[in-house]
Image (cartoon, rainbow, N blue to C red):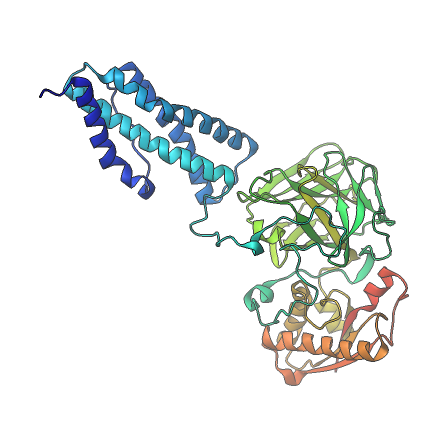
Length: 514
C-alpha cells in the first residue's frame, strides 16, 4: 500500500521528535540557531520567532546563574516572552500541513528545524517560568519545602500566638563556638555614647510610637510577646525617630521582622534608610540613602546614593548581595558613619564600605525610614530596637591609654548569657589589644538593668562576663590565664532604670586592665 505524502511527512516529523526531545532537560550549552532557511514561509517564521525568544530567555538564565538580579523591565520581557512562547508552541502542529507536497529533502529539513525550534521552545517555557518564580537555582540551593520554610504569618500580628520562621526566640541556645570564622572577622563596633534607643516597650499596642514622627500611618503591634513598629509601605511615607542631631561619628542599629514574603515579592520591595539634612517629610537638600532589598525570587543588590545640597552627589551604586534568607530571619542591620566613611552590615557580613560617602561641608542630622513596593495587606515589615550611638570607631586606643572602657554594645539574648552575634566587633577589638601586648591582663565586669531580682541580676551579670571571656578564648585564642571576670548586677547604674534609654545604658560590660 502506498503511503500518502501527508502521512509520510507526519511520520518523518514524529521520528525526529522522538530522537530529539528526550534530551531537553539535559541541555547544558546554548542551542545553535539554524543557519539556513527551509523555504517554507510558515516554517521559517516559526523557527525564527522561536529562536528570537529563546535567545532572550537564555540571556536571562545566564544572569540568574551569575547572580545578577533582574529588574522590572527584564521581568516584563520574560512575561511577554512566556505568552508568545505558549502561542508558538500551540501553533507548531498546524504548520505541518504546509510541508505536505514539498520534496522529501525539504520535508526532512523542515521537520528537523521544527523539532529544533520546539526544543528551544520547551527550554524557554520551562526556564522563563522558573525565572519568574525565582526557582531557577533550586537544584543547588533550595531545600525540600516543609512547614518550617513557610514565610507566611497570621494576618493579625497583634496576637501572642503569631508564629513565623522569621522569629528567632530570645532564648535561642546558640553556642558561641558556632560560626567562629564569621564572628572572628566581624568588625562593626557600636558607638559608646547612646543618643537614642527605642524598643517600644513603653508604647501601647495600636498606638503610634511616642518617640517618632510620620506623615502617614503605622502602629505598635505585638508579635510573640514582643512589641514591634509596623511600617506602612508608600513612596512618600517617612518615619522619623526623635534624634535631635547626628555627630561626625555614630552608629545606627535595628532589628527587622517581615511577614507575607514569597517568590512573588517584588524586586523593588525595599527598606530605605535616609540620613538627611532636614527633619521634614522629604529627602532633604543633602542626604545619603541606603536601601535593603526584600525580593525572594532572585538576588537583588543593596543600593547606596548620596546627594549634596541639591547639586547632585556622585555616588549611586548597587552592591551584589544575596540576603534573601537573611531578611526572613530577623536580620540585624548596622550602619556606621565615621566622618566621610559609610558602612553597612546585615547580620555579621559587611556589604557596603564607601570611604568618602558623607559630605563634611553639608552635614546630615536626621534619620528617616521609608518602605516601598510591599503588597498592601499581604507583605509587612516591622522594626525594633533602634539604637543610635555616638562614636563607634576604635575602642583599642582608649583601653590602652586609659586602662578602662565601658560599652553597652555587647548584647545578649533577653534574660540569658547567650552572646548576640553583633557583639563580636567589640570583642574582636579587645582581642587585638591583648594580642598586641602580651603583658596586658583584663578584668571583665558585667552589669544589668534593674529588671528582675537583685540576686538573679547578680548571677546574670557574672554569667555574661564569663560568656565574653569564653568568646575571647574560643574565638580569638586568648589565654584564659590573662582574663578575670566579675558581675555587679544592677548595683552600679549609670542612668535611670525607669526608661528604656537608661536601661540600655545600664546593660553594659566593662574591661579594666589589671
